Length: 531
Image 1: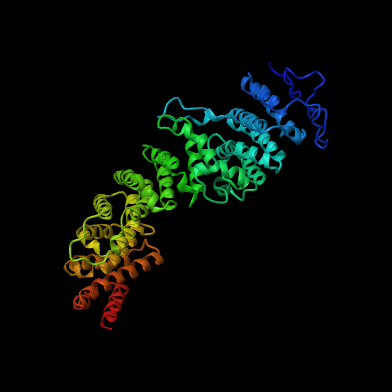
Image 2: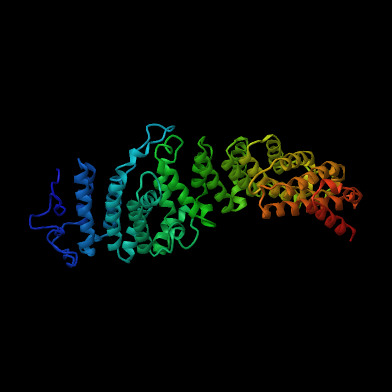
């Protein structure tokens, strides 16, 4: 039946004609006291009727009228009637009734789906979503405002909270399907959910007061009440949509999943790892850079917030390593940057850092650290894109630190990278050059006995750099000074590694070819070495 105007919700067919629902706002003011529940039909029957009408609504105006009326119902009706049930079975029925009604309400602002898993919808496809989401948020906020603090109502809140949280997160993010007003309404809904449940913030909402395994949630729900998190419930909602064939059809699914995962930390993440890891790997394996980066971010969060023993269990860490290692062959700077950072932490789960190993009479075996560093250096030697060179150069010092003396295995490649990167300018901040100078310093300190045979080539390169930088008028004074200082430090370390044998060469530099600034740097190096 199509409703032309928003009358009060009708009673179920079995109700007597004397039963009348709460009056609408047209006949009552907002300050009117809630009506007593003695003459009203059972709330479960009414909720079921409202759900059927929402699902069967034939027009947007009919849907809007129903949503508006439900908001008034939640605001003005007697709470004792709204949340009334007689037996334990009645409370279960009430929770199911509210859960299905909330799902139907949320369905009124559902996002359109892509036709396949390869394309994406244009922004125009979401034009109507914000105007539909606002009244839904308002109605759900009104429902939360009526919920009290009794134990039974706490169970009801925990039953609907996962649905409300997923809906709020979908609509408070800045996306094509939201507007400023719909984002504000969704944020208000999220705040109302936290306030009603007594949760401090979103992580507390998801995790509760302590870690719980999935099998412990039912028990904790009765004993801990609102202190229980709703992470399991949210994953129950998301999981059917996070399959290989479906997750790309709705743009919001990956964002809600990533938001949820990034709120969960130790020790709660471990107990849900089997449900959080597969979707993260799906995102990581996607061909779109934005999805891939989101997946790497999720995987990195898992690595940082899961005990190493849990990651090594069932060979998970090795799976993660292989999934990330293949991205080192990509040419997307942002992906490379995220992957190199994640691998640095993941390698500590898989093996001890080479720099921490005690000296051994036998040759140390090659490890995954060697594999990653070798591939990075190989790509750096041939890379010509400035942005990628910066990413590689910024990550390399951390890997050299991790390798320690074992960097001796890669000295030839390190030397080629240093020579190649110091020859090419990187204005205006000279990030690549500064980072490569840092690499040379760390390498010289770690492998100084092996540097003597490479000093001649490196010395020539560093002197050329000093001369070029001192005469480059395009560099700012601060950047020039940084380059001069770092280059001078590299020269001093090389001189020290050769026990001062290079001093005579530095003292013979032709003053007619160098500025006074360069000569001052060289004089400082020789003076310091003599001491």
